[in-house]
Length: 315
Length: 315
Picture 1 (cartoon, rainbow over the protein chains, first blue to last red):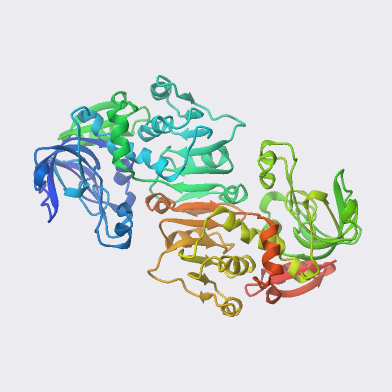
Picture 2 (tube, one colour):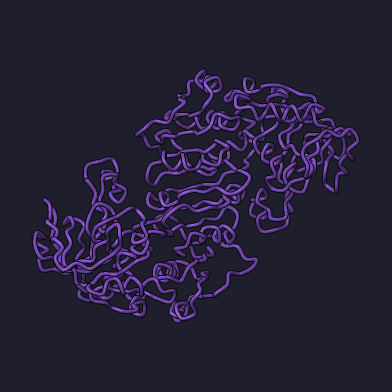
């Protein structure tokens, strides 16, 4: 099959990559559309030491092994849990220590014609959600995860740092809970997408204001340091950014101000799907370009550009 | 008056340092005993850029300006709040942005014959608490702060990293909530103090076990990295360590495992005083030595020794 393959020496297109062979309980899914996310760009820089087919944001059709799901249009939870450890037993399969993660850890991903996932990871899509919307469900679920971890109310002031792909989704999701929201980014064109939805934006952080909650969606190594300067004492920082390599920072402010720092990764698909189905979140304007798989390297270059929004791949 | 004074070129004893002049609402307190804490050692290394008289753990007698408190034996809350900002209004005076902090920020401290504190910061002591116990109330309150920030129950497994002065107090306080507690340190002699109270100890962290809560009391720059390796996914790390300068660390694990990191500083005196009065915490065995103020430099050197426990200064 056709696939984009990450090897030690870089990313390249292969026309004859072996198709995945689904294990017991797994379905084979034909990929219709896949999204490039910041994690994919980091993987290409060596993050996690991943080799194989990257890609974990996708929409596809079940080709075989889906039992009742064959032929259905699906998205998928990317963490493949063992199902029998204490984390799985506690409903925390996304943290199963034996897990593989689609296109990130121990399992080939979505930048290919086919992928394999456990049947129980698949979520069927209503017809009202288009492919270009559905491909945002995985990052939208990651945005919704913040609301699972932190009780944000209408009285809380929230600052979003970063107007990248994830930042724009996080801002829209958190705007459902509080109107005291400010999104800071570098790109007026991206911020305008939020402003059109009534969300306050700025290209420079306020000099004196401090926020109850700051979400670091910068994807940059210095994002956390900026967040620490903008959160109030006893406030919370949600850290969405992972970066290849170490960060160097002064954490004393965290101790002195008794700030809570919450690492946040993947989230639940159900609220994400509901938000999309009810039109509460706009993803249509977030697509920059769709590339064929053969032009994957160019697509990655495009996704790296500062002004780029979501770059999609079509097998 | 006699005082230990920290200047840009180091710490020295002065026999003729000016006594503090209490402002409106402040009392003058004659210091009976003061404790050297890790923060003092960091201040001497340049942390916070503090100059003046360090020292914030003390027991004393109100000399004047105490109104009903003159002649009473007291300890004191070290954060001196403005009383009128939004933090003070919300009962968070310890985080008042206009505050001074005794012996740490903008206010001379306890390594002297006299100190000045707002009357409302003073707490009178029952006769049942001795001076050598009372001098532990400030760090014991900092240990109790963890229970204010995090709901630790009998079913939670807790790991304490560091068998220094604060670590030994934290272990004793958290042992009041859970028996599933392990204290890790480098000094068998110190750990034996906990073992005598029925607390499990070890000099090496378990290879495979992961804990619901890990408290970093190492006072070392690499303590947080160790904590991240020992906390379970979705678990919590309490960070008590402040160090002069930056830390270099890989925070991706925090995001991937969705760990919550909680900065923790000063705490409430009331539960600390109750624990001490009821004999639930032992501090008597934690005193290494009492030095006269004139030998302050030697006392600091002693406090820096790896095996040292609490080193006290007597004006």
